[in-house]
Length: 632
Image (tube, rainbow, N blue to C red; front, side, top):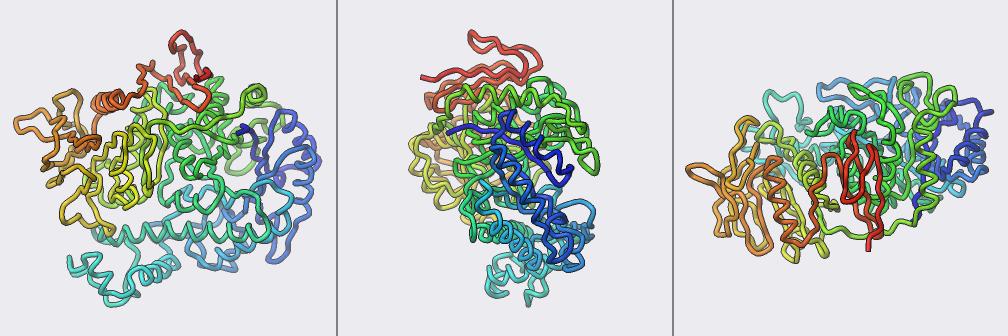
């Protein structure tokens, strides 16, 4: 696979007489890809039916003429103002029932059929006109960004009622599935069902889970409409650019509709805005050492092996609580880390910093006056290094982890203990594996086979799918489930007979207690469990217990199946995972703080996120350094 680079460009923001010079400089820099168009609806159609294609024709011709390949985005993330006159009810509403107003972006409700069709029609028109002139497509932009998947609008309510009717068929089935005999919550008609917001206390978890599934399905339906429209006239690959720690919809479901998954990587913005745990002071100018890697591996799974970084941070952003400048060398490091995880392309956002509107403080490769910003030199260095680098060779790594969007919804709806979060637990275990020098594949919850994995983690999956259950039963490597795995059914009810129902591992979770952060329970082997603790009845081998007068089983085992009954702290997680990795025959490292490895088919990459030099074997790696070693 050839590794390529690109940028995001907005010709509508700049005088046309600079386009050719911009394209020349892009090509001279070594860029291959340019993404355009994803916010340009009002420029393409300033009034209903008044299409202005001429400027986009010239922009694409200019870029293609310089040898650049174009990714064309559909502009539905920014509906023009006149669209609200056409569809006054298209606005999403927040959980307090207030409409999201015009004046920013992503203000539409995914459930609105009229705007969905209008957006699909725009995608169809773009495909018909440019299907043979662009090399790839992007649908919309950053689904879910700014908390925009969950809409509490009247349109969403009516669509939700229809969705429920399709799912359950009749009221008796819904009332039974939801347990509506509790608190006199039974309904007589689907028209009586509201959205699960503004209730006096928490709504029925089955009601909330149904709404979360519905909201995800609306995103999937929305994306499918545009994908189908594009494919009427183009066979170029289609992608969508996902974001970091956006979990409100099932990315695997949209990913199956397209050829490529992309995501927008902003390491320093994410550090201060959404990374759980970690040392934010030590990595203020570098970003968290594991957050980007986690998403690289996640979106490689969403794209079924094909993925890009569509937007890579080149300097300070504008949207985090604080926005420092990257440490010199980090723009290069982030780019090479993406390639190490299998990215086909890394595209920097954006080509030139725009001096007006909401993102004027967001750095680009060029300053607003077109002089080179600091990230430009590092992009040039990446381009030069790529020219001498061998093609990437993909290979399955020995460790896997299952991630499940529906489990994230389940534990948000009913956390039982403040802070229980599927993403957080998965990420912390992923971080521990990375600190041991291991490379990880992330797998979807319907994974049907685990061949080739020496160690697989299945943390906090609310309900094991039939394919995953069969894969666990057939796995030859070690499989670690838990904590909080397979304790619910599809309607958020406690499993009866009690779970978890684990292949070849007899255990029953008869009681679950949650622990405040300042009251962890010590383990005999060292470290603690915190937040979540299951009381197990089991005939399996008890590998580890709590250290107290009446010790509880924490780690149980039968053959190569293991179950963890509590949330381990850093010490316990490192100790347990190291032991399992060594048993599985994996190469485990004692990495210096800030150093991370990633193995590919032909190379080993070593990255130094620290602000001081670090050693790996005989090699000293400078801050923001990237070491590439050939593998046998």
